[in-house]
Image (cartoon, rainbow, N blue to C red; front, side):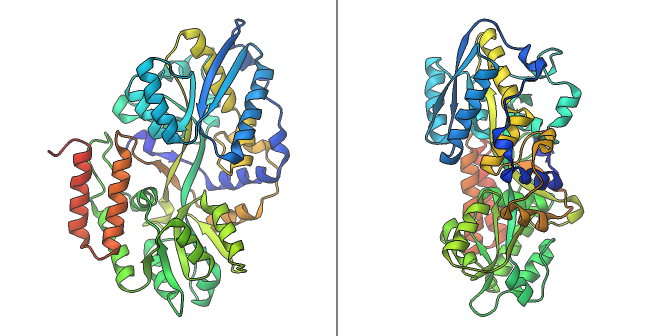
Length: 441
């Protein structure tokens, strides 16, 4: 397993982090780290930054940029907001062709991997290791385990091209009332999950509502000790025991009437909110959406969220995704200034402020000291559901045409749920992915 696929985060840290969401950390002043200030230049420079924030986070991001300029008045940041990561990718490819890339990009790892493959991003390993500009050992240790490895791409000699900015994880949502009525506990293993799905299938309720997502399927693979691709990301690896067992679970529960396909994520959330399903696999970004669905349904049902089931709960895994900060290749004085911004945005103060607005995990451990003790209701569910579990989070593939791999996985899940034979479907999907990777004519 490659290093970048072993991103570890402590659920206890996640839950402590959540306390910032009711805290005053949104008003934390900009960092005045003397060591960071020393990295800047006395020559005024204006940098361009591209990102594609949500409406809720765009205002905070601009506030962060304004605060950065107060701390570093010789560095001006001109922010260009893109409508989506897809738009950022398309415009970035055009900018590469014209040699007009922005100085800083904040985007998902696949977008950045594509830019890196085209030679448009500045490698960061030497800068990270630099005695004056880089990160000390204690600073490296301050990042959550593995987060610094997220910006490494195996197909590019595992060089670092990005710093972490925010993250989300795959999780299991459950209707506690339906579980209680069926006299079953929250499932921690896949065997328990199967039993709970069957036990809660009664009356108008079904056990598991499925809305196939590639990254949820990846989390299911990881939870069984499997992987999507091999370490070099050159061959499909999901056609192993982990992949087969995952499909067999889907088949068994679907044929038994305990699981069914929803038409969409929205329909799955609505069914869950109306008590028509006891279990649903999504990610932490669904917390607020599911709470809204419960409100629209006028539901008083008790519900919770926890890590996805595991083959071995003592070695728990999940899938992680999110955005990172990268620097474009440019003259050294511009990269030096952009590096100051990247360092500043990933500092504890900014990490805490960003997490409060976006409900994402901060990237620094020391950000936790800035967070208030009160947990908002949504994150109380995380605390109650995760307990002391320590899942290892792993990233999805970032190879070229990774989206086509996602599509193949979603089609695999859907076809098996609709009656396709698991072994044959797995073989066909694996061959399809290997063709995408260029390994089968």
